[in-house]
Amino acid sequence: MSDKTTEKVTENLIEGRNPVIEAYRAGKVIDKLYIQDGCNDGPVMTVKREAKKHDTYVRYVSKEQLDRMSATGMHQGVIAVTAAYEYSEMEDIFRLAEERGEAPFVYILDNIVDPHNLGAIIRTANLSGAHGVIIPKNRAVGLTATVARTSAGALNFTPVVKVTNIAKTIEELKDRGMWFVCGDMDGEVMYDLNLTGPIGLVIGNEGDGVSRLVKEKCDFVASIPMKGDIDSLNASVSAGILGFEIVRQRMQSSKR
Image 1 (cartoon, rainbow, N blue to C red):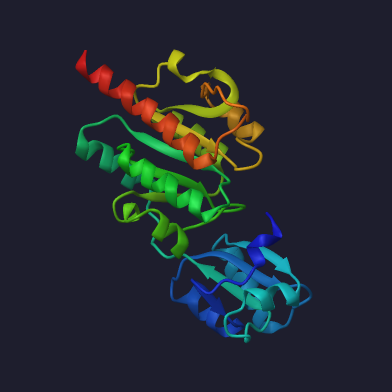
Image 2: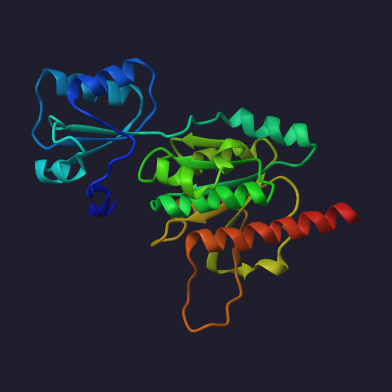
């Protein structure tokens, strides 16, 4: 993750050792935890135990980086980034598909780190009729206020599920009858693939694309035909193009 994550942020932060401990014990959802290098006193060790118990992504940074993040200047070596929205459960996705009488359709995001991309993809997922979005707990952005704003209200209607391991989650969903396609420029042209049925669309990280292990779990790799002078699209744009090709094929299939 880039050091840009430690720039000054004023939203969804809990600063200080005791406030963070209290937030955990109150059941507050914490997406990420930043701890000053070398801090190992009693309260910090309690914070670390709570973080481990809740499987929170922890990053150890310098005091200077925490100072840049802090809105109060009173972080005491600990800053937590909290979720702006509650996360859903996997069953919420399947329940929504069942209520609509549709085959499940989900977006799976493999380490998207830009909150604007995540918000835009959640908006696209809603407009394309997807039943949910799945994101990883670590090395990715969570449901920050920026994500909520960029989604333009879609977070109120689209379940977002946070999982520990994307590759394992794909395997588990395959056991429930789903199959998966990921976007990659080296894949088959998307128009040549059958993208109907219970499907998961996997979108990769902004810089590295879909990770090797996750790509190996996918049934197909789809490419977007491009005619320009550059060789890649923004992650949220790719998600929109591939997502609406799925919509087109599902609509055609339902007319047969």
